[in-house]
Length: 430
Image (cartoon, rainbow, N blue to C red; front, top):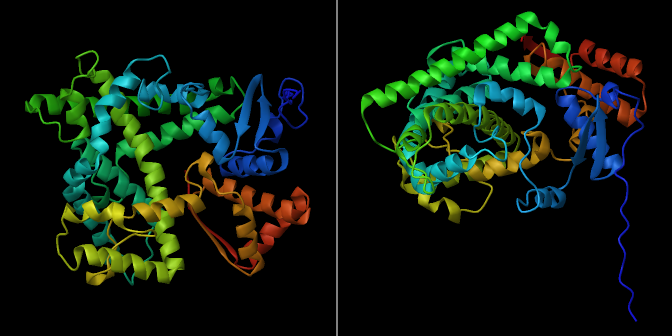
Protein backbone atom coordinates (compact mmCIF):
# COMPACT_ATOMS: atom_id res chain seq x y z
CA UNK A 1 0.00 0.00 0.00
CA UNK A 2 1.40 3.40 -1.03
CA UNK A 3 1.68 5.86 1.79
CA UNK A 4 0.72 9.46 0.92
CA UNK A 5 3.62 11.85 1.07
CA UNK A 6 3.54 14.41 3.84
CA UNK A 7 4.93 17.87 3.27
CA UNK A 8 6.31 19.40 6.45
CA UNK A 9 6.09 23.16 6.71
CA UNK A 10 9.49 24.78 7.10
CA UNK A 11 10.11 28.04 8.97
CA UNK A 12 10.95 31.01 6.77
CA UNK A 13 14.67 31.72 7.25
CA UNK A 14 15.82 35.05 8.63
CA UNK A 15 18.88 36.65 10.19
CA UNK A 16 19.08 37.04 13.99
CA UNK A 17 16.98 40.08 14.94
CA UNK A 18 17.08 42.58 17.79
CA UNK A 19 14.06 43.28 20.00
CA UNK A 20 11.74 46.02 18.70
CA UNK A 21 13.98 47.22 15.85
CA UNK A 22 14.36 43.77 14.26
CA UNK A 23 16.77 43.89 11.31
CA UNK A 24 16.41 47.66 10.78
CA UNK A 25 19.97 48.54 11.82
CA UNK A 26 21.47 46.10 9.31
CA UNK A 27 19.38 47.15 6.30
CA UNK A 28 21.19 49.50 3.88
CA UNK A 29 19.41 52.21 1.92
CA UNK A 30 19.11 53.15 -1.74
CA UNK A 31 20.75 50.96 -4.37
CA UNK A 32 22.74 49.19 -1.65
CA UNK A 33 19.44 47.80 -0.30
CA UNK A 34 18.80 46.01 -3.58
CA UNK A 35 22.33 44.57 -3.65
CA UNK A 36 21.78 43.47 -0.06
CA UNK A 37 18.55 41.64 -0.95
CA UNK A 38 20.27 39.89 -3.84
CA UNK A 39 23.03 38.72 -1.47
CA UNK A 40 20.49 37.49 1.09
CA UNK A 41 18.63 35.47 -1.55
CA UNK A 42 21.89 33.80 -2.52
CA UNK A 43 22.78 33.00 1.10
CA UNK A 44 19.39 32.39 2.76
CA UNK A 45 17.50 30.99 -0.21
CA UNK A 46 14.71 32.29 -2.46
CA UNK A 47 12.38 33.05 0.48
CA UNK A 48 13.47 34.86 3.63
CA UNK A 49 12.02 37.20 6.26
CA UNK A 50 12.89 40.74 7.31
CA UNK A 51 11.54 42.54 10.38
CA UNK A 52 11.80 46.24 11.17
CA UNK A 53 9.99 48.21 13.89
CA UNK A 54 7.12 45.76 14.10
CA UNK A 55 6.69 45.37 10.34
CA UNK A 56 7.34 41.96 8.83
CA UNK A 57 8.26 41.48 5.19
CA UNK A 58 8.85 38.23 3.29
CA UNK A 59 11.31 38.63 0.41
CA UNK A 60 10.94 36.30 -2.57
CA UNK A 61 13.45 35.93 -5.39
CA UNK A 62 13.42 33.82 -8.54
CA UNK A 63 11.22 33.66 -11.61
CA UNK A 64 9.15 30.61 -10.62
CA UNK A 65 8.19 31.95 -7.20
CA UNK A 66 7.45 35.44 -8.48
CA UNK A 67 5.26 33.97 -11.24
CA UNK A 68 3.37 32.00 -8.60
CA UNK A 69 2.80 35.13 -6.53
CA UNK A 70 1.39 36.83 -9.62
CA UNK A 71 -1.54 34.36 -9.64
CA UNK A 72 -4.45 36.70 -8.94
CA UNK A 73 -6.71 33.80 -7.96
CA UNK A 74 -4.52 33.16 -4.91
CA UNK A 75 -2.87 36.49 -4.10
CA UNK A 76 -4.21 40.01 -4.07
CA UNK A 77 -2.65 43.35 -4.87
CA UNK A 78 -0.86 44.95 -1.92
CA UNK A 79 -0.23 48.66 -1.42
CA UNK A 80 2.85 48.96 0.78
CA UNK A 81 3.52 52.01 3.01
CA UNK A 82 5.57 53.97 0.45
CA UNK A 83 2.76 53.60 -2.09
CA UNK A 84 0.28 54.72 0.55
CA UNK A 85 2.30 57.94 0.85
CA UNK A 86 2.36 58.32 -2.94
CA UNK A 87 -1.46 58.21 -2.83
CA UNK A 88 -1.25 61.81 -1.61
CA UNK A 89 -0.63 62.79 -5.23
CA UNK A 90 -1.50 59.64 -7.24
CA UNK A 91 -4.68 58.68 -5.35
CA UNK A 92 -6.37 55.53 -6.61
CA UNK A 93 -4.29 55.34 -9.77
CA UNK A 94 -3.39 52.01 -11.31
CA UNK A 95 -0.33 51.47 -9.09
CA UNK A 96 -1.61 52.95 -5.84
CA UNK A 97 -5.24 51.75 -5.79
CA UNK A 98 -6.17 49.32 -3.06
CA UNK A 99 -7.37 45.91 -4.15
CA UNK A 100 -11.01 46.69 -3.28
CA UNK A 101 -11.21 50.06 -5.07
CA UNK A 102 -13.32 49.92 -8.26
CA UNK A 103 -11.40 52.52 -10.25
CA UNK A 104 -8.47 50.16 -10.78
CA UNK A 105 -10.57 47.81 -12.92
CA UNK A 106 -12.37 50.65 -14.67
CA UNK A 107 -9.14 52.40 -15.65
CA UNK A 108 -7.47 49.13 -16.63
CA UNK A 109 -10.32 48.12 -18.94
CA UNK A 110 -10.67 51.57 -20.50
CA UNK A 111 -6.94 52.06 -21.13
CA UNK A 112 -5.84 48.63 -22.33
CA UNK A 113 -6.70 49.29 -26.02
CA UNK A 114 -4.45 52.35 -25.90
CA UNK A 115 -1.42 50.04 -25.84
CA UNK A 116 -2.26 47.95 -28.89
CA UNK A 117 -0.02 47.86 -31.95
CA UNK A 118 -2.58 49.98 -33.81
CA UNK A 119 -2.40 52.63 -31.10
CA UNK A 120 1.40 52.64 -31.35
CA UNK A 121 1.07 53.58 -35.03
CA UNK A 122 -1.03 56.58 -34.02
CA UNK A 123 1.70 57.72 -31.63
CA UNK A 124 4.52 57.19 -34.13
CA UNK A 125 4.74 60.71 -35.57
CA UNK A 126 4.85 62.29 -32.11
CA UNK A 127 7.48 59.82 -30.91
CA UNK A 128 9.57 60.59 -33.97
CA UNK A 129 9.31 64.33 -33.31
CA UNK A 130 10.51 63.91 -29.72
CA UNK A 131 13.34 61.60 -30.84
CA UNK A 132 14.46 64.28 -33.32
CA UNK A 133 14.61 66.81 -30.49
CA UNK A 134 16.98 64.47 -28.67
CA UNK A 135 19.12 63.87 -31.75
CA UNK A 136 19.25 67.62 -32.43
CA UNK A 137 20.62 68.23 -28.94
CA UNK A 138 23.22 65.49 -29.35
CA UNK A 139 24.23 66.76 -32.80
CA UNK A 140 24.98 70.18 -31.28
CA UNK A 141 27.11 68.55 -28.58
CA UNK A 142 29.05 66.26 -30.95
CA UNK A 143 32.80 66.86 -30.65
CA UNK A 144 32.34 69.65 -28.11
CA UNK A 145 31.00 68.21 -24.89
CA UNK A 146 29.78 65.00 -23.31
CA UNK A 147 26.07 64.27 -23.09
CA UNK A 148 24.16 63.00 -20.07
CA UNK A 149 22.54 59.92 -21.61
CA UNK A 150 20.35 58.86 -18.63
CA UNK A 151 19.24 62.45 -18.08
CA UNK A 152 18.35 62.92 -21.74
CA UNK A 153 16.53 59.58 -21.83
CA UNK A 154 14.41 60.85 -18.94
CA UNK A 155 13.66 64.02 -20.92
CA UNK A 156 12.79 61.89 -23.93
CA UNK A 157 10.36 59.69 -22.03
CA UNK A 158 8.68 62.57 -20.19
CA UNK A 159 8.06 64.45 -23.43
CA UNK A 160 6.85 61.31 -25.20
CA UNK A 161 4.41 60.37 -22.43
CA UNK A 162 3.17 63.95 -22.07
CA UNK A 163 2.53 64.48 -25.78
CA UNK A 164 1.31 61.02 -26.75
CA UNK A 165 -0.72 60.50 -23.61
CA UNK A 166 -2.15 63.87 -22.74
CA UNK A 167 -1.26 66.41 -25.40
CA UNK A 168 1.03 68.28 -23.00
CA UNK A 169 4.55 69.37 -23.94
CA UNK A 170 7.11 69.49 -21.11
CA UNK A 171 9.54 71.15 -23.59
CA UNK A 172 12.41 69.24 -22.00
CA UNK A 173 14.83 69.81 -24.89
CA UNK A 174 14.11 73.53 -25.18
CA UNK A 175 15.27 74.46 -21.69
CA UNK A 176 18.26 73.69 -19.51
CA UNK A 177 16.40 73.04 -16.27
CA UNK A 178 13.76 70.34 -15.87
CA UNK A 179 10.10 71.35 -16.07
CA UNK A 180 8.71 72.40 -12.62
CA UNK A 181 6.37 69.36 -12.67
CA UNK A 182 9.33 67.03 -13.18
CA UNK A 183 11.28 68.65 -10.35
CA UNK A 184 8.24 68.48 -8.04
CA UNK A 185 7.63 64.84 -8.86
CA UNK A 186 11.29 63.93 -8.28
CA UNK A 187 11.31 65.64 -4.88
CA UNK A 188 7.97 64.10 -3.87
CA UNK A 189 9.13 60.58 -4.74
CA UNK A 190 12.40 61.14 -2.87
CA UNK A 191 10.42 62.30 0.17
CA UNK A 192 8.24 59.20 0.24
CA UNK A 193 11.27 56.94 -0.19
CA UNK A 194 13.16 58.67 2.61
CA UNK A 195 10.11 58.40 4.86
CA UNK A 196 9.87 54.68 4.15
CA UNK A 197 13.52 54.18 5.10
CA UNK A 198 13.44 56.35 8.25
CA UNK A 199 12.61 55.44 11.83
CA UNK A 200 8.80 55.51 12.13
CA UNK A 201 7.62 58.88 13.42
CA UNK A 202 10.85 60.73 12.67
CA UNK A 203 9.20 62.49 9.71
CA UNK A 204 7.33 64.64 12.23
CA UNK A 205 10.54 66.64 12.61
CA UNK A 206 10.94 67.18 8.86
CA UNK A 207 9.08 70.47 8.93
CA UNK A 208 10.69 72.09 5.88
CA UNK A 209 10.73 68.90 3.82
CA UNK A 210 7.11 68.16 4.69
CA UNK A 211 6.04 71.65 3.65
CA UNK A 212 8.03 71.32 0.40
CA UNK A 213 6.29 67.98 -0.19
CA UNK A 214 2.86 69.58 0.25
CA UNK A 215 3.80 72.34 -2.18
CA UNK A 216 5.02 69.79 -4.71
CA UNK A 217 1.79 67.80 -4.43
CA UNK A 218 -0.22 70.98 -5.03
CA UNK A 219 1.90 71.90 -8.06
CA UNK A 220 1.50 68.47 -9.67
CA UNK A 221 -2.22 68.09 -9.09
CA UNK A 222 -2.98 71.69 -10.12
CA UNK A 223 -1.09 71.37 -13.40
CA UNK A 224 -2.81 68.10 -14.36
CA UNK A 225 -6.22 69.47 -13.35
CA UNK A 226 -5.66 72.41 -15.67
CA UNK A 227 -4.69 70.08 -18.55
CA UNK A 228 -7.97 68.20 -18.02
CA UNK A 229 -9.99 71.43 -17.88
CA UNK A 230 -8.41 72.71 -21.09
CA UNK A 231 -9.23 69.46 -22.87
CA UNK A 232 -12.83 69.64 -21.71
CA UNK A 233 -13.12 73.28 -22.79
CA UNK A 234 -11.87 72.36 -26.25
CA UNK A 235 -15.16 70.55 -26.82
CA UNK A 236 -13.58 67.61 -28.65
CA UNK A 237 -14.59 64.00 -28.13
CA UNK A 238 -11.56 62.26 -29.63
CA UNK A 239 -10.24 59.13 -27.94
CA UNK A 240 -6.94 59.25 -29.82
CA UNK A 241 -4.77 59.53 -26.71
CA UNK A 242 -4.90 58.35 -23.10
CA UNK A 243 -6.57 61.52 -21.85
CA UNK A 244 -9.24 61.47 -24.54
CA UNK A 245 -9.92 57.82 -23.90
CA UNK A 246 -10.37 58.41 -20.16
CA UNK A 247 -12.61 61.42 -20.72
CA UNK A 248 -14.92 59.94 -23.35
CA UNK A 249 -14.87 56.14 -23.04
CA UNK A 250 -17.57 54.67 -20.76
CA UNK A 251 -16.79 51.69 -18.59
CA UNK A 252 -18.37 48.57 -20.11
CA UNK A 253 -19.84 47.45 -16.77
CA UNK A 254 -21.10 50.71 -15.28
CA UNK A 255 -21.67 52.73 -18.44
CA UNK A 256 -19.82 55.70 -16.91
CA UNK A 257 -16.39 57.15 -17.73
CA UNK A 258 -13.76 57.87 -15.12
CA UNK A 259 -14.29 60.97 -12.98
CA UNK A 260 -11.88 63.88 -13.31
CA UNK A 261 -10.12 63.20 -9.99
CA UNK A 262 -9.33 59.64 -11.01
CA UNK A 263 -8.25 60.81 -14.46
CA UNK A 264 -5.80 63.14 -12.74
CA UNK A 265 -4.55 60.22 -10.64
CA UNK A 266 -4.02 58.09 -13.74
CA UNK A 267 -2.13 60.88 -15.55
CA UNK A 268 0.26 61.31 -12.62
CA UNK A 269 0.63 57.53 -12.33
CA UNK A 270 1.64 57.20 -15.98
CA UNK A 271 4.21 59.97 -15.60
CA UNK A 272 5.67 58.36 -12.46
CA UNK A 273 5.66 54.77 -13.63
CA UNK A 274 6.21 55.32 -17.32
CA UNK A 275 9.34 57.45 -17.43
CA UNK A 276 11.88 55.83 -15.12
CA UNK A 277 12.08 52.21 -16.26
CA UNK A 278 11.82 53.22 -19.92
CA UNK A 279 14.59 55.82 -19.66
CA UNK A 280 16.75 53.36 -17.72
CA UNK A 281 16.20 50.60 -20.28
CA UNK A 282 17.07 52.93 -23.17
CA UNK A 283 20.21 54.13 -21.37
CA UNK A 284 21.43 50.60 -20.72
CA UNK A 285 20.51 49.52 -24.25
CA UNK A 286 22.64 52.30 -25.76
CA UNK A 287 25.46 51.47 -23.37
CA UNK A 288 25.50 47.81 -24.40
CA UNK A 289 25.33 48.77 -28.07
CA UNK A 290 28.54 50.78 -27.67
CA UNK A 291 30.17 47.83 -25.91
CA UNK A 292 29.11 45.32 -28.59
CA UNK A 293 29.73 46.85 -32.03
CA UNK A 294 28.72 43.65 -33.81
CA UNK A 295 25.24 43.94 -32.25
CA UNK A 296 25.13 47.64 -33.12
CA UNK A 297 25.89 46.81 -36.74
CA UNK A 298 23.07 44.25 -36.86
CA UNK A 299 20.68 46.70 -35.21
CA UNK A 300 21.56 49.44 -37.71
CA UNK A 301 21.20 47.04 -40.63
CA UNK A 302 17.79 45.89 -39.42
CA UNK A 303 16.30 49.34 -38.99
CA UNK A 304 17.84 50.51 -42.27
CA UNK A 305 16.15 47.55 -43.94
CA UNK A 306 12.82 48.76 -42.55
CA UNK A 307 13.17 52.47 -43.28
CA UNK A 308 16.31 52.98 -45.35
CA UNK A 309 17.30 56.64 -45.49
CA UNK A 310 13.74 57.96 -45.38
CA UNK A 311 13.80 61.46 -43.90
CA UNK A 312 10.46 60.80 -42.21
CA UNK A 313 10.14 57.05 -41.53
CA UNK A 314 6.50 56.11 -41.21
CA UNK A 315 4.82 53.60 -38.94
CA UNK A 316 4.36 51.01 -41.71
CA UNK A 317 7.51 49.18 -40.61
CA UNK A 318 5.98 48.49 -37.21
CA UNK A 319 3.85 45.67 -38.57
CA UNK A 320 7.05 43.70 -39.30
CA UNK A 321 8.35 44.07 -35.77
CA UNK A 322 7.13 40.79 -34.32
CA UNK A 323 8.74 38.79 -37.13
CA UNK A 324 12.24 40.13 -36.48
CA UNK A 325 14.66 37.98 -34.46
CA UNK A 326 16.41 39.53 -31.42
CA UNK A 327 18.57 41.37 -30.63
CA UNK A 328 17.20 44.42 -32.41
CA UNK A 329 17.42 48.11 -31.91
CA UNK A 330 18.14 51.54 -33.18
CA UNK A 331 18.70 53.09 -36.54
CA UNK A 332 22.01 53.95 -38.18
CA UNK A 333 21.40 55.37 -41.65
CA UNK A 334 21.79 59.05 -42.37
CA UNK A 335 24.30 60.58 -39.97
CA UNK A 336 24.45 57.32 -37.99
CA UNK A 337 21.59 58.69 -35.92
CA UNK A 338 19.91 56.58 -33.32
CA UNK A 339 16.17 56.17 -33.74
CA UNK A 340 13.63 54.58 -31.52
CA UNK A 341 12.25 51.08 -31.94
CA UNK A 342 14.39 49.05 -29.59
CA UNK A 343 11.95 46.65 -27.97
CA UNK A 344 14.07 43.50 -28.26
CA UNK A 345 17.18 45.37 -27.17
CA UNK A 346 15.14 46.69 -24.23
CA UNK A 347 14.48 43.13 -23.13
CA UNK A 348 18.16 42.23 -23.26
CA UNK A 349 19.22 45.35 -21.36
CA UNK A 350 16.56 44.76 -18.71
CA UNK A 351 17.82 41.22 -18.13
CA UNK A 352 21.30 42.57 -17.49
CA UNK A 353 20.70 45.83 -15.65
CA UNK A 354 18.81 46.97 -12.53
CA UNK A 355 15.78 48.88 -13.78
CA UNK A 356 13.50 47.72 -10.99
CA UNK A 357 14.40 46.05 -7.66
CA UNK A 358 12.56 42.87 -8.63
CA UNK A 359 14.28 42.55 -11.98
CA UNK A 360 17.95 42.55 -11.01
CA UNK A 361 20.24 39.99 -12.51
CA UNK A 362 22.02 37.90 -9.85
CA UNK A 363 25.78 38.00 -10.25
CA UNK A 364 25.98 41.72 -11.03
CA UNK A 365 28.41 42.24 -8.17
CA UNK A 366 30.67 39.55 -9.61
CA UNK A 367 30.74 41.32 -12.96
CA UNK A 368 31.63 44.64 -11.30
CA UNK A 369 34.42 42.98 -9.34
CA UNK A 370 35.81 41.36 -12.48
CA UNK A 371 35.98 44.76 -14.18
CA UNK A 372 37.76 46.28 -11.18
CA UNK A 373 40.22 43.38 -11.00
CA UNK A 374 41.02 43.93 -14.68
CA UNK A 375 41.97 47.56 -13.95
CA UNK A 376 38.67 49.13 -14.99
CA UNK A 377 37.71 52.66 -14.05
CA UNK A 378 34.45 53.85 -12.48
CA UNK A 379 32.69 57.08 -13.47
CA UNK A 380 29.74 58.10 -11.27
CA UNK A 381 27.51 60.88 -12.56
CA UNK A 382 24.28 62.06 -10.95
CA UNK A 383 22.68 63.04 -7.66
CA UNK A 384 25.37 63.74 -5.06
CA UNK A 385 23.08 63.65 -2.05
CA UNK A 386 21.38 60.26 -2.48
CA UNK A 387 22.76 58.35 -5.45
CA UNK A 388 26.51 58.90 -5.02
CA UNK A 389 26.69 57.75 -1.36
CA UNK A 390 24.59 54.68 -2.24
CA UNK A 391 27.01 53.80 -5.06
CA UNK A 392 30.01 54.17 -2.76
CA UNK A 393 28.30 51.96 -0.19
CA UNK A 394 27.54 49.36 -2.87
CA UNK A 395 31.18 49.28 -4.03
CA UNK A 396 32.57 48.91 -0.51
CA UNK A 397 30.02 46.14 0.14
CA UNK A 398 31.26 44.29 -2.94
CA UNK A 399 34.86 44.67 -1.74
CA UNK A 400 34.00 43.34 1.74
CA UNK A 401 32.18 40.33 0.33
CA UNK A 402 34.97 39.42 -2.10
CA UNK A 403 37.93 40.00 0.25
CA UNK A 404 36.57 39.54 3.77
CA UNK A 405 37.67 43.08 4.65
CA UNK A 406 35.97 45.07 7.40
CA UNK A 407 34.25 48.42 6.80
CA UNK A 408 37.35 50.48 7.58
CA UNK A 409 39.52 48.46 5.19
CA UNK A 410 36.87 48.70 2.46
CA UNK A 411 36.69 52.47 2.93
CA UNK A 412 40.49 52.75 2.53
CA UNK A 413 40.29 50.59 -0.61
CA UNK A 414 37.76 52.98 -2.15
CA UNK A 415 39.92 55.99 -1.20
CA UNK A 416 42.77 54.28 -3.02
CA UNK A 417 40.64 53.96 -6.15
CA UNK A 418 39.80 57.67 -5.94
CA UNK A 419 43.41 58.73 -5.46
CA UNK A 420 44.56 56.58 -8.38
CA UNK A 421 41.94 58.11 -10.68
CA UNK A 422 40.00 54.85 -11.05
CA UNK A 423 36.88 56.10 -9.21
CA UNK A 424 35.67 59.50 -10.40
CA UNK A 425 32.53 61.32 -9.31
CA UNK A 426 30.77 64.04 -11.34
CA UNK A 427 27.80 64.82 -9.11
CA UNK A 428 25.53 67.67 -8.17
CA UNK A 429 23.56 68.50 -5.04
CA UNK A 430 20.21 66.69 -4.86
